[in-house]
Amino acid sequence: MKQSQRIILTGIFFTLFLFTLTIGCSASNPVQTIIILPRPSVGGIPTGGWAMNPSTNPFPSKVQQVFQPGQELIIGLKINKQLKNNVTFSKVTLFNRETKNEVVVLSSDLGPFEPGQAFYLPYYVVPNEKGSYEVRIYLDQEVVASALFEVS
Image (cartoon, rainbow, N blue to C red; front, side, top):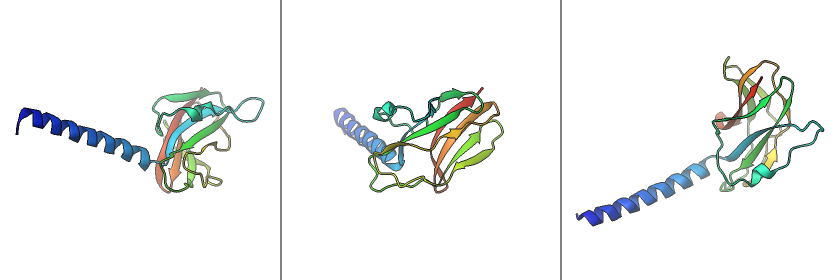
């Protein structure tokens, strides 16, 4: 096989691999985006500008918000528009990253949600204990999205 043929075949293989990886990853997870926001002090919900962001990251690695004890948070989710069916989540938990304690905070009104739909889950009061926490979204027994926040 000639050098030029190897380069062409390698290029085709690499392109197909990237295409398959991109499609497979984006279609396999029901959550496209998760965001943690403070509940506005006057009540209501935050604006939905975050849902227009085309980025896909159901597992952001940076701390999204720092809260004071007793402050309220809102979880925003955007469902993957490539799904074929509606999705209903099984539970939402708060996981204390230091103690490894996980507490269910929502287990009802978690669907069904349509592909491409962006929405807020009911607000929740953050723990009084200072520390690093993770909100986890479950589909059956699998964590399909999580986001980090801190209480200081």
